[in-house]
Amino acid sequence: MYPKPIERYFAPTTITEALRLLGEYRGDAKLLAGGQSLMPMLKVRLLETQCLIDLNRVQGLAEIRDDGDGLCLGPMVRHAEVEANPLIRAGYPVLADAARVIGDPQIRNRGTIGGSLVHADPAADYPAVVLALDARLTLTKSSAESRTVQASEFFLSPMITAISEDELLTAIRLPKPAVRSAGAYVKQSLVSGDFAIISVAAQLALDNGGRCERARIVIGGTASGATPVVRASELLAGNKLDEKLCREAGEVAAREVEVSSDVRASAQYRRELIKYLVPAMIRRAQERAGGV
Image (cartoon, rainbow, N blue to C red):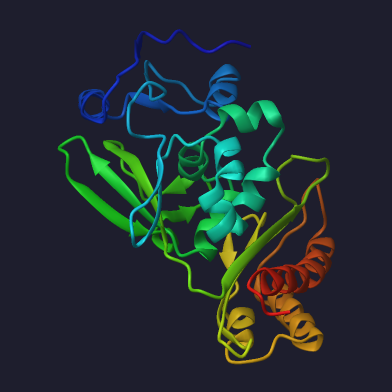
């Protein structure tokens, strides 16, 4: 199939111009970032639009910079750039892990972090990671007003986010990591690069003695989308991360998160994956943070 005819196509070069168009065609426009989700959906007519606003020429949306309080990523940063960037690899390895396993090289060279977050597929890789990192997302209106929302408030339900029709995601901000902190991400899928059957993101902060000060564990790939497992995370805080405790955290996480069966995997298989992958990511994050 082919998309229904798109009557208006715009390729703005500034954020101001993009926001003006978004306000003018509010409700009738779709934003084109990497296009790796939007274009297939238009092609099979799961989505229709009369107006396409292409963000690929907009200046200032593809930057990665240290702003002193952490890292600021523009929404048009490609997956391949997320994977390769030295600031991300050094301070936020959990994010580089996720970018590395998205699709194939062609998708990683075209797809964008902002496009993936706004699309909010429940089996996508980035939502679990930005939740684990406690990221903040800046949304800018056509009136030039901006607001910042926590990642925990951004994802409302599968495929639905807090962004409104006249808003543009203009920045993803990651807080400055603690001295002894690191994370890790992994997913299990049917084939390499596919969407996750189950994914796990773990972010840890350790004290000088190697004990866990803070932990955030998020499970992705469930029907309801990326889900923080609070009880499993709290189990780690204040304790030495030995094998027994890590296994217990995996078992608690498997009971805490709601999973279901579908054509790709049974609920029981997903629970067994969680039991195995959560301890593995805790240990990997601990090693990266210098705790073992």
